[in-house]
Amino acid sequence: MDPHVDEGQPAHYVKSAEKTLAVLLAFTNDQPRQTVSSVAASTVLSRAAARRFLLTLTDLGYLRNDGTHFELAPRCLDIGASFLANLTLPQIAEPHLKQLSIDLNETTSLCILDGTDIVYVARVASPRLLSVSINVGTRFPAWATSMGRVLIGGLPRQQREEFFEAVQLQQFTERSISSVEELRAEVDRADHRGWSMVTQELEDGLRGIAVPVVRRGEVIAAVNVSLQTHRAPEETIERTIVPLLTDAAKQIADDYGGRHNSAS
Image (cartoon, rainbow, N blue to C red; front, side, top):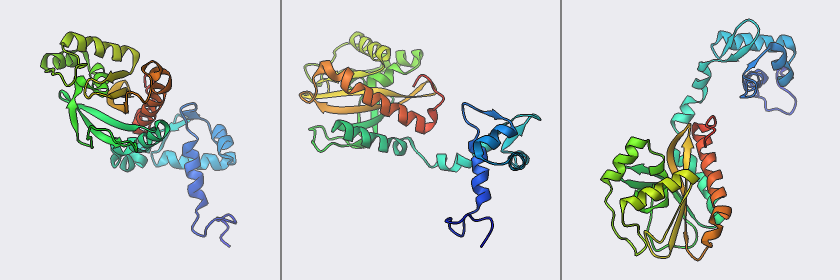
């Protein structure tokens, strides 16, 4: 038997590879700088073995060493670069939208802002069909949607003003806002409370609730749930639906590289 393979492990198993990764993973947000002794303790390696792994990883450029402490070096980013390069925001969002759709039993979406429109980039439909036919790629005027209002609210001040100057309002329903002043107030409100609700402004009987997806201080998208107005009383939305949307948006941001963003 190969002495480097533990009993019960497949014949191809390389124990030293497991130990190497264990050493790298010992460096966390809470403990970014570590000594040989602390790495040995967290990886259950002997101090001598931990030192050899640490020095080898330093020689390879994956760690830095100031003589006493070790820390991760930028070359560690190469390990995940190819994986991350092949991930897109819609792909990352989809499993979270699916779970959100299950939790709410409603249609969920991810949208981005493109000029004065919102564009659907991911969508998970509920079993109940809504009269609005929406697919990935569908556009709507941003001002008339909950997603658009949180996305407009996330724009830098100058860009937000340029949006208001360019927007053209129209009456989709009797409830559609009819002035830029009303739109400003609604966008400010959404920005202040961190979510938006638009009821029967785009289509009668339809309500949308949205929260921003914030990565490192920047609003990059909006998560939305679409539901018929009779499905949930308006006064319960903030308590029952907004927290689930907010949690999904944070998970999407985290998976898209936003774990260090305290604002999300």
